[in-house]
Image (cartoon, rainbow, N blue to C red; front, side, top):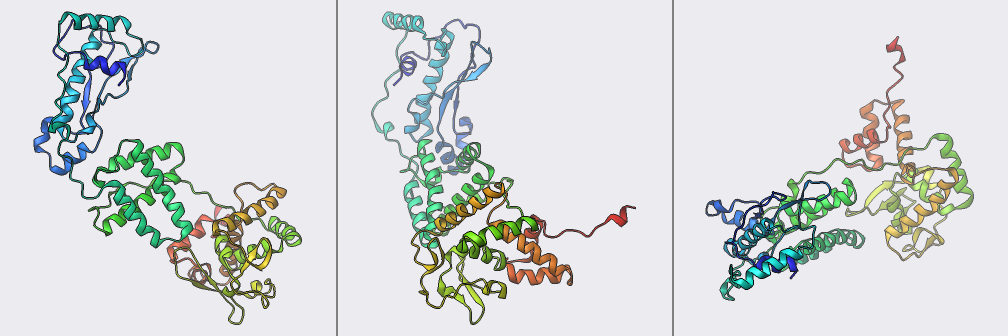
Length: 447
Protein backbone atom coordinates (compact mmCIF):
# COMPACT_ATOMS: atom_id res chain seq x y z
CA UNK A 1 0.00 0.00 0.00
CA UNK A 2 1.35 3.53 -0.83
CA UNK A 3 2.57 6.00 1.81
CA UNK A 4 -0.40 8.19 1.00
CA UNK A 5 -2.87 5.34 1.61
CA UNK A 6 -1.17 4.48 4.93
CA UNK A 7 -1.40 8.12 5.90
CA UNK A 8 -5.14 8.11 5.27
CA UNK A 9 -5.71 4.95 7.27
CA UNK A 10 -3.67 6.28 10.18
CA UNK A 11 -5.81 9.37 10.81
CA UNK A 12 -9.09 9.30 12.71
CA UNK A 13 -12.14 10.67 10.95
CA UNK A 14 -13.38 12.66 13.96
CA UNK A 15 -10.37 14.94 14.23
CA UNK A 16 -10.85 18.38 12.71
CA UNK A 17 -8.78 21.50 12.53
CA UNK A 18 -9.22 25.05 11.30
CA UNK A 19 -9.77 25.04 7.55
CA UNK A 20 -7.16 26.50 5.28
CA UNK A 21 -7.74 28.36 2.07
CA UNK A 22 -9.64 25.99 -0.19
CA UNK A 23 -7.23 24.70 -2.79
CA UNK A 24 -9.29 21.53 -3.09
CA UNK A 25 -12.82 20.29 -3.61
CA UNK A 26 -14.53 18.41 -0.81
CA UNK A 27 -13.91 14.65 -1.22
CA UNK A 28 -16.93 12.63 -2.31
CA UNK A 29 -17.77 8.97 -2.78
CA UNK A 30 -18.78 7.56 -6.16
CA UNK A 31 -21.33 4.80 -5.53
CA UNK A 32 -21.94 3.28 -8.94
CA UNK A 33 -24.10 6.09 -10.26
CA UNK A 34 -26.90 5.86 -7.67
CA UNK A 35 -27.76 7.78 -4.52
CA UNK A 36 -27.08 5.48 -1.57
CA UNK A 37 -29.66 7.29 0.57
CA UNK A 38 -32.24 5.90 -1.86
CA UNK A 39 -30.78 2.38 -1.72
CA UNK A 40 -33.86 0.79 -0.12
CA UNK A 41 -36.03 2.10 -2.96
CA UNK A 42 -33.85 0.59 -5.69
CA UNK A 43 -34.72 -2.70 -7.34
CA UNK A 44 -32.34 -5.67 -7.02
CA UNK A 45 -31.32 -5.19 -10.63
CA UNK A 46 -30.47 -1.52 -10.01
CA UNK A 47 -28.47 -2.42 -6.89
CA UNK A 48 -26.57 -5.17 -8.70
CA UNK A 49 -25.80 -2.78 -11.54
CA UNK A 50 -24.42 -0.19 -9.09
CA UNK A 51 -22.32 -2.82 -7.31
CA UNK A 52 -20.96 -4.08 -10.61
CA UNK A 53 -19.12 -0.74 -10.98
CA UNK A 54 -16.03 0.34 -9.01
CA UNK A 55 -16.73 2.60 -6.01
CA UNK A 56 -14.15 5.14 -4.91
CA UNK A 57 -13.37 8.46 -3.20
CA UNK A 58 -12.62 11.34 -5.55
CA UNK A 59 -11.57 14.97 -5.22
CA UNK A 60 -9.80 17.77 -7.09
CA UNK A 61 -6.82 19.91 -6.14
CA UNK A 62 -5.62 23.23 -7.50
CA UNK A 63 -2.63 22.86 -9.83
CA UNK A 64 0.35 25.01 -8.71
CA UNK A 65 0.97 26.32 -12.25
CA UNK A 66 -2.50 26.67 -13.82
CA UNK A 67 -4.27 27.39 -10.51
CA UNK A 68 -7.20 25.35 -11.78
CA UNK A 69 -8.80 22.47 -9.90
CA UNK A 70 -7.55 19.19 -11.37
CA UNK A 71 -9.18 15.82 -10.72
CA UNK A 72 -6.84 13.55 -8.73
CA UNK A 73 -6.52 9.74 -8.95
CA UNK A 74 -9.45 7.82 -7.49
CA UNK A 75 -8.95 6.24 -4.07
CA UNK A 76 -10.49 2.77 -3.81
CA UNK A 77 -8.79 1.38 -0.72
CA UNK A 78 -9.76 -2.21 -1.57
CA UNK A 79 -13.48 -1.43 -1.22
CA UNK A 80 -14.37 -3.19 -4.46
CA UNK A 81 -13.26 -6.54 -3.04
CA UNK A 82 -16.58 -6.44 -1.17
CA UNK A 83 -20.00 -6.90 -2.67
CA UNK A 84 -22.46 -5.06 -0.45
CA UNK A 85 -23.17 -1.35 -0.02
CA UNK A 86 -22.53 -1.54 3.72
CA UNK A 87 -19.09 -3.14 3.44
CA UNK A 88 -17.92 -0.74 0.75
CA UNK A 89 -19.06 2.33 2.66
CA UNK A 90 -17.36 1.09 5.84
CA UNK A 91 -14.09 1.46 3.95
CA UNK A 92 -14.80 4.52 1.83
CA UNK A 93 -16.41 6.81 4.43
CA UNK A 94 -13.38 6.81 6.78
CA UNK A 95 -11.12 7.33 3.77
CA UNK A 96 -13.20 10.29 2.64
CA UNK A 97 -13.25 11.89 6.09
CA UNK A 98 -9.56 11.26 6.64
CA UNK A 99 -8.74 12.73 3.26
CA UNK A 100 -10.69 15.86 4.12
CA UNK A 101 -8.82 16.12 7.43
CA UNK A 102 -5.34 15.93 5.90
CA UNK A 103 -6.37 18.33 3.13
CA UNK A 104 -7.33 20.83 5.83
CA UNK A 105 -3.99 20.14 7.50
CA UNK A 106 -2.25 21.18 4.31
CA UNK A 107 -1.79 17.99 2.31
CA UNK A 108 -0.76 18.80 -1.27
CA UNK A 109 -0.59 15.97 -3.85
CA UNK A 110 1.99 18.01 -5.81
CA UNK A 111 4.43 18.17 -2.84
CA UNK A 112 6.28 15.61 -0.71
CA UNK A 113 4.36 16.57 2.49
CA UNK A 114 7.26 15.62 4.79
CA UNK A 115 6.35 18.25 7.41
CA UNK A 116 2.74 17.07 7.40
CA UNK A 117 3.82 13.49 7.99
CA UNK A 118 5.93 14.58 11.00
CA UNK A 119 3.04 16.60 12.43
CA UNK A 120 0.65 13.66 12.15
CA UNK A 121 3.21 11.30 13.66
CA UNK A 122 3.45 13.63 16.67
CA UNK A 123 -0.33 13.67 17.04
CA UNK A 124 -0.32 9.88 16.99
CA UNK A 125 2.43 9.71 19.64
CA UNK A 126 0.61 12.19 21.91
CA UNK A 127 -2.62 10.24 21.57
CA UNK A 128 -4.52 13.31 20.36
CA UNK A 129 -6.65 10.98 18.26
CA UNK A 130 -7.14 7.30 17.68
CA UNK A 131 -6.28 5.40 14.55
CA UNK A 132 -9.15 3.85 12.58
CA UNK A 133 -10.34 0.56 13.97
CA UNK A 134 -9.07 -2.44 12.12
CA UNK A 135 -11.81 -4.30 10.31
CA UNK A 136 -12.62 -7.59 11.95
CA UNK A 137 -11.83 -10.59 9.85
CA UNK A 138 -15.32 -11.99 10.20
CA UNK A 139 -18.02 -12.75 7.72
CA UNK A 140 -17.82 -9.15 6.53
CA UNK A 141 -14.62 -10.01 4.69
CA UNK A 142 -16.55 -12.69 2.87
CA UNK A 143 -19.86 -10.96 2.22
CA UNK A 144 -22.53 -12.68 0.23
CA UNK A 145 -21.65 -11.85 -3.40
CA UNK A 146 -23.97 -11.15 -6.27
CA UNK A 147 -25.40 -14.51 -7.33
CA UNK A 148 -23.23 -15.93 -10.08
CA UNK A 149 -25.39 -17.81 -12.55
CA UNK A 150 -22.85 -17.72 -15.38
CA UNK A 151 -19.41 -16.18 -14.96
CA UNK A 152 -17.99 -13.73 -17.49
CA UNK A 153 -15.35 -16.25 -18.58
CA UNK A 154 -17.81 -19.12 -18.92
CA UNK A 155 -20.30 -16.97 -20.85
CA UNK A 156 -17.62 -15.77 -23.30
CA UNK A 157 -16.16 -19.26 -23.78
CA UNK A 158 -19.61 -20.74 -24.40
CA UNK A 159 -20.68 -18.07 -26.89
CA UNK A 160 -17.34 -18.24 -28.74
CA UNK A 161 -17.56 -22.01 -29.06
CA UNK A 162 -20.97 -21.61 -30.70
CA UNK A 163 -19.76 -18.83 -33.01
CA UNK A 164 -16.87 -21.05 -34.08
CA UNK A 165 -19.37 -23.56 -35.44
CA UNK A 166 -21.16 -20.79 -37.33
CA UNK A 167 -18.20 -19.07 -39.01
CA UNK A 168 -15.49 -20.16 -41.41
CA UNK A 169 -11.97 -20.37 -40.02
CA UNK A 170 -10.71 -17.04 -41.37
CA UNK A 171 -13.84 -15.19 -40.30
CA UNK A 172 -13.74 -16.76 -36.86
CA UNK A 173 -10.10 -15.77 -36.33
CA UNK A 174 -10.90 -12.11 -37.08
CA UNK A 175 -14.05 -12.28 -34.96
CA UNK A 176 -12.31 -13.90 -31.99
CA UNK A 177 -9.53 -11.32 -32.18
CA UNK A 178 -12.05 -8.49 -31.66
CA UNK A 179 -13.76 -10.32 -28.79
CA UNK A 180 -10.41 -11.08 -27.13
CA UNK A 181 -9.48 -7.39 -27.28
CA UNK A 182 -12.72 -6.58 -25.44
CA UNK A 183 -12.15 -9.38 -22.93
CA UNK A 184 -8.63 -8.18 -22.14
CA UNK A 185 -9.92 -4.64 -21.67
CA UNK A 186 -12.55 -5.91 -19.22
CA UNK A 187 -9.90 -7.61 -17.08
CA UNK A 188 -7.64 -4.55 -17.19
CA UNK A 189 -10.56 -2.43 -16.00
CA UNK A 190 -11.41 -4.61 -13.01
CA UNK A 191 -14.28 -6.63 -14.45
CA UNK A 192 -13.50 -9.93 -12.74
CA UNK A 193 -13.84 -12.99 -14.96
CA UNK A 194 -15.25 -15.13 -12.12
CA UNK A 195 -18.19 -12.78 -11.48
CA UNK A 196 -21.57 -12.97 -13.18
CA UNK A 197 -21.94 -11.91 -16.82
CA UNK A 198 -24.55 -9.37 -15.65
CA UNK A 199 -21.74 -7.13 -14.39
CA UNK A 200 -21.04 -6.21 -18.02
CA UNK A 201 -23.50 -3.37 -18.40
CA UNK A 202 -24.30 -1.04 -21.28
CA UNK A 203 -22.22 1.67 -19.62
CA UNK A 204 -19.20 -0.67 -19.50
CA UNK A 205 -19.46 -1.52 -23.20
CA UNK A 206 -19.93 2.13 -24.18
CA UNK A 207 -16.79 3.03 -22.23
CA UNK A 208 -14.84 0.37 -24.15
CA UNK A 209 -16.22 1.49 -27.53
CA UNK A 210 -15.32 5.10 -26.75
CA UNK A 211 -11.76 4.00 -26.07
CA UNK A 212 -11.64 2.10 -29.39
CA UNK A 213 -12.97 5.22 -31.14
CA UNK A 214 -10.33 7.46 -29.54
CA UNK A 215 -7.50 5.13 -30.58
CA UNK A 216 -8.67 4.09 -34.05
CA UNK A 217 -11.73 5.19 -36.06
CA UNK A 218 -15.52 5.28 -36.13
CA UNK A 219 -15.51 2.38 -38.56
CA UNK A 220 -13.40 0.18 -36.28
CA UNK A 221 -15.54 1.19 -33.30
CA UNK A 222 -18.68 0.15 -35.21
CA UNK A 223 -17.10 -3.16 -36.20
CA UNK A 224 -16.21 -3.83 -32.55
CA UNK A 225 -19.77 -2.99 -31.54
CA UNK A 226 -21.10 -5.43 -34.16
CA UNK A 227 -18.84 -8.26 -32.98
CA UNK A 228 -19.78 -7.79 -29.31
CA UNK A 229 -23.47 -7.51 -30.20
CA UNK A 230 -23.40 -10.79 -32.12
CA UNK A 231 -21.68 -12.50 -29.17
CA UNK A 232 -24.32 -11.21 -26.75
CA UNK A 233 -27.07 -12.32 -29.12
CA UNK A 234 -25.69 -15.86 -28.94
CA UNK A 235 -25.89 -15.54 -25.14
CA UNK A 236 -29.53 -14.44 -25.43
CA UNK A 237 -30.35 -17.30 -27.81
CA UNK A 238 -28.83 -19.76 -25.34
CA UNK A 239 -30.54 -18.20 -22.29
CA UNK A 240 -27.29 -17.07 -20.68
CA UNK A 241 -28.55 -13.47 -20.49
CA UNK A 242 -32.02 -12.00 -20.96
CA UNK A 243 -31.45 -9.17 -23.44
CA UNK A 244 -28.87 -8.00 -25.94
CA UNK A 245 -28.52 -4.37 -24.86
CA UNK A 246 -25.61 -3.86 -27.29
CA UNK A 247 -28.17 -3.60 -30.10
CA UNK A 248 -29.44 -0.35 -28.56
CA UNK A 249 -25.98 1.27 -28.70
CA UNK A 250 -25.88 3.67 -31.63
CA UNK A 251 -23.83 3.11 -34.78
CA UNK A 252 -21.62 6.09 -35.55
CA UNK A 253 -21.50 7.67 -38.97
CA UNK A 254 -18.26 6.82 -40.73
CA UNK A 255 -16.85 7.59 -44.15
CA UNK A 256 -16.15 4.24 -45.79
CA UNK A 257 -13.16 3.94 -48.08
CA UNK A 258 -14.35 3.48 -51.65
CA UNK A 259 -12.29 2.73 -54.72
CA UNK A 260 -12.82 5.15 -57.60
CA UNK A 261 -13.74 4.06 -61.10
CA UNK A 262 -11.06 4.22 -63.81
CA UNK A 263 -11.18 6.70 -66.63
CA UNK A 264 -11.25 4.93 -70.06
CA UNK A 265 -7.76 6.05 -71.07
CA UNK A 266 -6.22 4.91 -67.76
CA UNK A 267 -8.13 1.60 -67.89
CA UNK A 268 -6.67 0.77 -71.32
CA UNK A 269 -3.13 1.55 -70.15
CA UNK A 270 -3.42 -0.61 -67.02
CA UNK A 271 -4.90 -3.61 -68.83
CA UNK A 272 -2.30 -3.36 -71.61
CA UNK A 273 0.51 -3.25 -69.01
CA UNK A 274 -0.79 -6.31 -67.10
CA UNK A 275 -1.52 -8.29 -70.28
CA UNK A 276 2.16 -8.15 -71.20
CA UNK A 277 3.53 -9.14 -67.80
CA UNK A 278 1.13 -11.08 -65.55
CA UNK A 279 -1.50 -13.37 -67.17
CA UNK A 280 -2.79 -14.70 -63.81
CA UNK A 281 -3.38 -11.20 -62.43
CA UNK A 282 -5.06 -10.29 -65.73
CA UNK A 283 -7.48 -13.24 -65.47
CA UNK A 284 -8.33 -12.27 -61.89
CA UNK A 285 -9.12 -8.74 -63.07
CA UNK A 286 -11.24 -10.11 -65.93
CA UNK A 287 -13.33 -12.16 -63.47
CA UNK A 288 -13.79 -9.00 -61.40
CA UNK A 289 -14.60 -6.90 -64.49
CA UNK A 290 -16.77 -9.27 -66.58
CA UNK A 291 -18.06 -11.65 -63.92
CA UNK A 292 -18.54 -8.91 -61.29
CA UNK A 293 -16.96 -11.08 -58.60
CA UNK A 294 -15.13 -9.74 -55.60
CA UNK A 295 -11.35 -10.34 -55.49
CA UNK A 296 -11.58 -12.87 -52.63
CA UNK A 297 -14.33 -14.77 -54.49
CA UNK A 298 -12.04 -15.15 -57.48
CA UNK A 299 -9.25 -16.39 -55.21
CA UNK A 300 -11.57 -19.14 -53.92
CA UNK A 301 -12.31 -20.50 -57.41
CA UNK A 302 -11.15 -24.02 -58.21
CA UNK A 303 -11.03 -25.64 -61.63
CA UNK A 304 -14.15 -27.66 -60.77
CA UNK A 305 -16.12 -24.42 -60.26
CA UNK A 306 -15.90 -23.55 -63.96
CA UNK A 307 -18.63 -25.16 -66.10
CA UNK A 308 -17.85 -24.29 -69.71
CA UNK A 309 -20.56 -26.55 -71.14
CA UNK A 310 -23.31 -24.63 -69.36
CA UNK A 311 -21.42 -21.30 -69.20
CA UNK A 312 -21.71 -21.13 -65.41
CA UNK A 313 -19.35 -20.45 -62.53
CA UNK A 314 -19.99 -21.70 -58.98
CA UNK A 315 -18.98 -19.07 -56.46
CA UNK A 316 -18.42 -19.77 -52.76
CA UNK A 317 -19.33 -16.52 -51.02
CA UNK A 318 -18.65 -15.70 -47.38
CA UNK A 319 -21.15 -17.34 -44.98
CA UNK A 320 -23.57 -18.11 -47.83
CA UNK A 321 -24.44 -21.15 -49.92
CA UNK A 322 -22.69 -21.58 -53.25
CA UNK A 323 -24.16 -19.17 -55.78
CA UNK A 324 -24.25 -19.75 -59.53
CA UNK A 325 -23.35 -16.95 -61.90
CA UNK A 326 -23.31 -16.74 -65.68
CA UNK A 327 -19.99 -16.92 -67.51
CA UNK A 328 -20.31 -14.30 -70.24
CA UNK A 329 -18.70 -15.11 -73.56
CA UNK A 330 -16.14 -12.34 -73.13
CA UNK A 331 -14.91 -14.11 -69.98
CA UNK A 332 -15.01 -17.61 -71.48
CA UNK A 333 -12.76 -16.37 -74.28
CA UNK A 334 -10.25 -15.18 -71.68
CA UNK A 335 -9.96 -18.56 -69.93
CA UNK A 336 -7.03 -20.89 -70.54
CA UNK A 337 -7.58 -24.51 -71.62
CA UNK A 338 -8.53 -26.26 -68.35
CA UNK A 339 -8.77 -29.79 -69.76
CA UNK A 340 -5.60 -31.20 -68.18
CA UNK A 341 -5.85 -29.49 -64.80
CA UNK A 342 -6.88 -31.24 -61.57
CA UNK A 343 -10.45 -30.31 -60.54
CA UNK A 344 -9.32 -29.59 -56.96
CA UNK A 345 -6.53 -27.20 -57.98
CA UNK A 346 -7.06 -23.46 -57.77
CA UNK A 347 -7.79 -21.54 -60.94
CA UNK A 348 -5.44 -18.64 -60.23
CA UNK A 349 -2.19 -18.92 -58.26
CA UNK A 350 1.26 -17.27 -58.19
CA UNK A 351 2.58 -20.40 -59.92
CA UNK A 352 0.22 -20.22 -62.88
CA UNK A 353 -3.25 -21.59 -63.64
CA UNK A 354 -4.66 -24.71 -61.98
CA UNK A 355 -2.01 -25.22 -59.29
CA UNK A 356 -2.03 -26.14 -55.59
CA UNK A 357 -1.95 -23.11 -53.29
CA UNK A 358 -2.24 -23.92 -49.60
CA UNK A 359 -2.82 -20.68 -47.72
CA UNK A 360 -5.81 -18.72 -46.44
CA UNK A 361 -8.13 -16.90 -48.83
CA UNK A 362 -7.19 -13.62 -47.18
CA UNK A 363 -3.53 -14.28 -47.94
CA UNK A 364 -4.39 -15.09 -51.54
CA UNK A 365 -6.29 -11.83 -51.98
CA UNK A 366 -3.48 -9.88 -50.30
CA UNK A 367 -0.92 -11.45 -52.62
CA UNK A 368 -2.71 -10.22 -55.74
CA UNK A 369 -3.43 -6.85 -54.15
CA UNK A 370 0.32 -6.41 -53.64
CA UNK A 371 1.00 -7.50 -57.23
CA UNK A 372 -1.48 -4.94 -58.50
CA UNK A 373 -0.01 -2.22 -56.27
CA UNK A 374 3.24 -2.52 -58.22
CA UNK A 375 1.27 -1.65 -61.36
CA UNK A 376 -0.57 1.18 -59.60
CA UNK A 377 2.70 2.70 -58.46
CA UNK A 378 3.95 2.79 -62.05
CA UNK A 379 0.97 4.94 -63.02
CA UNK A 380 1.05 7.07 -59.86
CA UNK A 381 -2.35 5.88 -58.62
CA UNK A 382 -3.06 6.31 -54.92
CA UNK A 383 -5.12 4.48 -52.31
CA UNK A 384 -8.37 5.49 -54.04
CA UNK A 385 -7.73 2.88 -56.72
CA UNK A 386 -7.55 -0.88 -56.32
CA UNK A 387 -8.83 -4.18 -57.64
CA UNK A 388 -12.37 -3.23 -56.58
CA UNK A 389 -12.14 -0.27 -58.95
CA UNK A 390 -12.49 -2.68 -61.89
CA UNK A 391 -15.80 -3.98 -60.52
CA UNK A 392 -17.10 -0.43 -60.02
CA UNK A 393 -15.87 0.62 -63.47
CA UNK A 394 -17.50 -2.20 -65.43
CA UNK A 395 -20.80 -2.14 -63.50
CA UNK A 396 -20.98 1.59 -64.27
CA UNK A 397 -20.17 0.86 -67.92
CA UNK A 398 -22.84 -1.87 -68.16
CA UNK A 399 -25.54 0.19 -66.44
CA UNK A 400 -25.01 3.22 -68.66
CA UNK A 401 -25.08 1.01 -71.75
CA UNK A 402 -28.39 -0.56 -70.64
CA UNK A 403 -29.89 2.87 -69.99
CA UNK A 404 -29.41 3.81 -73.63
CA UNK A 405 -32.23 1.47 -74.65
CA UNK A 406 -34.11 0.71 -71.44
CA UNK A 407 -35.94 2.53 -68.67
CA UNK A 408 -34.35 3.02 -65.27
CA UNK A 409 -36.43 0.19 -63.79
CA UNK A 410 -35.66 -2.22 -66.66
CA UNK A 411 -31.94 -1.46 -66.53
CA UNK A 412 -31.75 -1.96 -62.77
CA UNK A 413 -33.82 -5.16 -62.93
CA UNK A 414 -31.41 -6.66 -65.45
CA UNK A 415 -28.42 -5.47 -63.46
CA UNK A 416 -29.77 -6.99 -60.24
CA UNK A 417 -29.50 -10.50 -61.72
CA UNK A 418 -25.96 -9.84 -62.91
CA UNK A 419 -24.16 -8.09 -60.04
CA UNK A 420 -25.31 -10.41 -57.24
CA UNK A 421 -26.94 -7.74 -55.05
CA UNK A 422 -29.68 -9.31 -52.95
CA UNK A 423 -32.20 -6.46 -53.07
CA UNK A 424 -33.06 -3.54 -55.36
CA UNK A 425 -32.40 -1.13 -52.47
CA UNK A 426 -28.88 -2.52 -52.07
CA UNK A 427 -28.24 -2.18 -55.81
CA UNK A 428 -29.58 1.37 -55.94
CA UNK A 429 -27.41 2.41 -53.00
CA UNK A 430 -24.38 0.83 -54.67
CA UNK A 431 -25.06 2.65 -57.95
CA UNK A 432 -25.36 5.94 -56.07
CA UNK A 433 -22.12 5.28 -54.19
CA UNK A 434 -20.13 4.66 -57.37
CA UNK A 435 -21.88 7.52 -59.25
CA UNK A 436 -23.08 5.14 -61.96
CA UNK A 437 -26.37 6.94 -62.40
CA UNK A 438 -25.78 10.40 -63.84
CA UNK A 439 -28.42 12.84 -65.11
CA UNK A 440 -28.63 13.94 -68.75
CA UNK A 441 -27.22 17.30 -69.75
CA UNK A 442 -29.56 19.93 -68.30
CA UNK A 443 -28.02 22.98 -70.01
CA UNK A 444 -31.19 23.77 -72.01
CA UNK A 445 -33.08 24.30 -68.75
CA UNK A 446 -30.64 26.96 -67.61
CA UNK A 447 -31.08 29.27 -70.64
